[in-house]
Image (tube, rainbow, N blue to C red; front, side, top):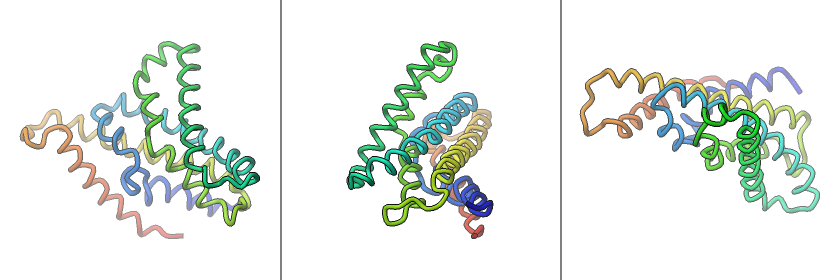
Amino acid sequence: MSIGQFLSIFISAVFVYNVILSRFLGLCSFVAISKETKPALAMSLAVMFVTTMSSIITWFIYRFLLIPFNITYLRTIAFILVIASFVQLVEMIIKKISPPLYRFFGIYLPLITVNCAVLGVAVLNIDMFFVNGKAIEGSFYYSVFQGICVGLGYTIAMLLMSGIRERLDFCSVPKCVKEFPLAFIIASIMSMSFMGFNGFKF
C-alpha cells in the first residue's frame, strides 16, 4: 500500500473518472432527483454509504467464495443479489430504528437498488485490484477507499446539478427545453468540464 495509490484513487474516482459525469453511471437518479438540493443530498449520502458497504461485501464474496469455487463468471449476478439484499436490509433497519430518517429518505433508498453506479464500483474494484484471480497487496483497503471516493464524486455531481437547477427556477426558460431536456444539456456541459481533469495523470 502507498499514499500515492490512495491519492490516485481519490483524484480518479472523484474528478477524472467521475461515476456520473465521466463513466455515465447512475444518470437516472442524477437527472430525476437533482431538482432540489435536499433530496439530492439525501440520495448522495445513501449512495455513498451503499457503495462503501457493497465494496466491502463484494470483495469478501469474490475473494472467499467465487475465486475458491472457480465461479467468477457469476460475479455480476452475485453482486446484484448482494447489493439488492443489502439495500433492503438497510431500509428495514432504518425503518425500525429511525422512522423520521426513513421518511426523510423516502423512495430514495429503494432507488439505490437499481442504481448502476453501485454495481459499477463493485465490478471496477475487482477489475482493478485483482490480477489473475489473486488480490493485489492492499486490495481490500483500496476497494473500500474507492467505494467512498465514488460516493463522494456522486455527491459532488448531484450537489452541483441541484444547485444549478434550483437557480434556473428563477429564470425564464423556453417550454421546449424546460425540465429534463435542459437537465441533459446542463449535464453534458458539466461532463465536458470534468473532462478537463483528464490532464491529471499518475
